[in-house]
Amino acid sequence: MKFKQLFKSSADWMRREGPSGDIVLSSRVRLARNLPGHSYPGWAEPPQREAVLGELLPIVEALPEMKGAFRAELGEMELLEKQFLVERHLVSREHAAREGGCAAVVDEDQSLSIMINEEDHLRMQAIVPGLDIVGAHRAIDQIDTVLDSQVGFAFDDQFGYLTSCPTNLGTGLRASAMLHLPGLVLADHVKQVVAAANKIGLAVRGIYGEGTEALANFFQISNQNTLGEEESVILERLQSVIEQIVTQERNARATLVEENRAMICDRIGRGYGVLRHAHVLSSKEALEHLSMLRLGADLGVLNPNAGLLRTLFAEIQPAHLQLAAGRTIEPEERDALRADFLQRRLKSLKPPNMLPLGNDIEGASTPEEEDSE
Image (cartoon, rainbow, N blue to C red; front, top):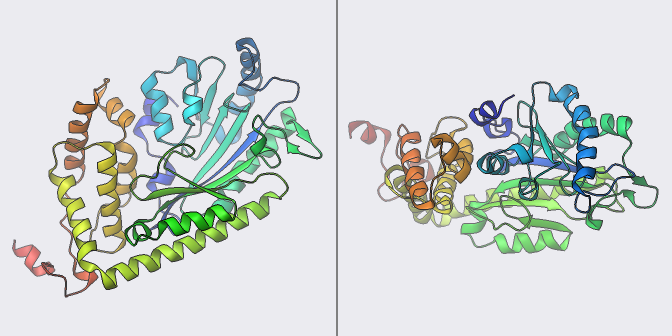
């Protein structure tokens, strides 16, 4: 697969809505693995990284799951192309910043991604739609088993899989889910949820993981401990906590609709109005208003095309916009381009019909009134 094909196609987790998809956008499981007898990428000299790449890349490309995959060495990619991979969650920001001796292999559905010579020799991940952490693990575990049988990963009877960072020792597993939590944010309860997750050893981060802020009511929740527990225990605990947060978010939305309908209607209406008519929009502002449109869709007051809002969250990102335009664009012009892009993409989206939230909403119109306008 060429980069152009990768760019023009949406990831499977962006197109489809999985279990609890109104709140959980995606589930991801990542495994860190290393080859014995080789320096870790951060300490290796360029010839050593090239040697590891030469050993691993043909094996990864030969995997049945990677038939027709996109494959690229990071040093040969343009900056915008690498940024695009980050925006699609296919490589980490750290991997995109690396040069020689580093590569990425991505399957046709953009569900499986293997980074060679990131922080570890291999960072393998699976992303699936909705809340399906076990399914994501199953997908990447199959690849892990095959690769281990061919190259033999560095493993210690006491410490488990050996990794560049001590925090990944043991299983080398990081599992996470991306959640949309506007109800808890608007009800001012999200801080309690974050604190409770931290107390039981879970990390709460922004859209792009470690070191990023939570934007537009999106939060990434993942395990922190990888040593001393079996993979099944880690996955089951995270799944259980996510299910509890999903319940809390649904309860928060129901309470807001019951007790503060006017505010909910105003936020959804403002989001629709700004995105349909603004001439300049930053990434942050656009994401915040798209979050409100998604909330409106989940509450039944908006009816966008299936998958439209999920794909827009990626398509309005800087690299996506610039690649679509075919050139590098300065931030101010990019904000204008983003606003124009959203106007065109949302042109057929009808205004919110607030009646599903209750007949006592001031200004709510009936379908008959909308048709007569």
